[in-house]
Length: 466
Image (cartoon, rainbow, N blue to C red; front, side):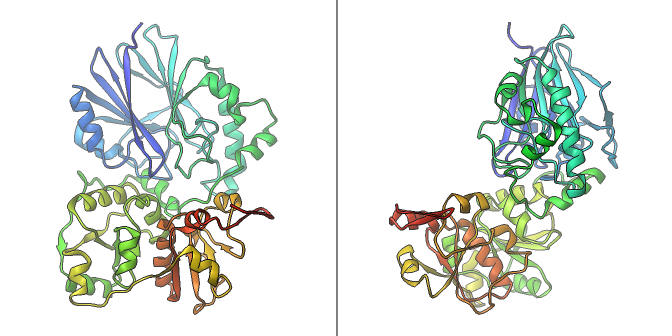
């Protein structure tokens, strides 16, 4: 029998998250679950299908992005639904285990599923017979091969949340039939999870068999497993829950920026405004405004801006096209970087006509090998990448930490910065230069180019000759 509903996912690879539009073929009513703040694509999809968006639902107070719930409610009149224990500071329907959203040919029932956060809920689609569940929108309570992390509210809450997550998975979600399809919010690319799988949907049966957190075990063993492989997460996370709780400012769409001349940008910089240069790292290296952050659009910007640029900064953009600027703004508002004053008209060329530019020196993999004893080689990749293989003699210092942590390098030491290919190393270099480390050199092509030359790497204590 054909399903009475359809599901349209909206995947954002930068954040590693999925939003879902669930609509009724019969009644043409629809709900949207866990939307990002730039909501135009959801509204367009609903309009193209002839749907009326009745509800916008959040599984939890998101730590990695600003919810689009208020934007959607303002534009469509949809009712906001969220956990009754979320403590939202704006109008909404408080949801708990007794809540049911009637879509006509099917129902959406609420399940309280704490663990990733205390207020976490999930949404279970039940067929017209009122008995048969067929789809679970699990947020972070259950993901492909794992569950979302329990340490984002602070270490003092980690163990208690893991206790809640254990009972959510074993006493609630695994009680559902094997054939129930599972649609998580968090997935590959999200710092809310440990890397588990590139797949974004699953079933209860598959997770029962393959998910290590779904295996029979003690709570203490569950806790240990749930904490394994968790990556460091961006600093902007500390602000998102509070904003989502009180309600973000309604923007009414992706902001359109005004052009600024070089003199205007210079005056703003003198007042503390920061420049965000979103061009490719090679263009940034060839010439940039002194003190600018160099984070290309597909870095992804949405992660790296939130990691290295202080939250609440006033920003001027330096990009090369209207489409690029629009994409930058789309990414920035997703994480609450709203105070963007404009963009440099004429890009770097207009600046260079009036003011100095800086360049970033570079060295090839071959030159690095020849000069390895003359520089301090800094590897800014993730810890998991470092452990898989690194250049002998390198120091590991993850790129996201460069902006905030105490640096163990002499200010005038020649620092050769290396990542996988050149993207993250240039971000780190732009931050280091802002922190007064001016003797910085980019390793062209990163460890990828090193390996392509057949140069050896260390994995653990083992030297691997390529």
